[in-house]
Image (cartoon, rainbow, N blue to C red; front, side, top):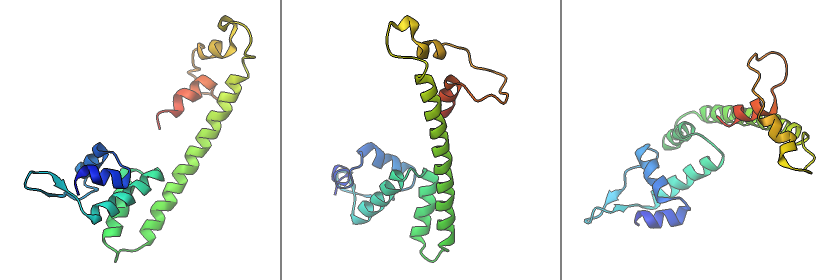
Length: 152
C-alpha cells in the first residue's frame, strides 16, 4: 500500500508518517518501480503502536525504548515497567502543575465581576502588573504562573 492508504488505515497524517520514518521509529518501506513508498501490514501494526503511545503522551524517546523492547522480546520486562512508572510520575507532576494553574486562573477570574467596561476589568489590570522578580515565599501571581506553565 502507498503512504496515503497507510495514513487512512491508521488515522495518521502523511507528514507524521514521514517524520516517524526520519526519526527511525518506522522502518524504511520498500519502493515501487515508480519510487513510491510501499508499506505492509507490519508498518500498520507499528504505526498503530506508535499512535497509541502518543495518545498516552509518551515522548519519542520513550516510544523508541518501548519499540526496542517490542523488537527484542527476550529483554527484561522490568525495564518497560520502570519506563511506565517514570511516565506516570511525569503525568502526576503535570497534573499538579495544571491544578496550580487552575487555582491561579480562578484567582484571576475572581478579580472581575464581568460588568462594566474593560477599562475597569480586574483581570486585564492584573495581567498588566509586572511579575515579582524576587521569588520569595509568596505564591506566584496568576500572571507569573500562567507564563511558567506553557513551556512544558
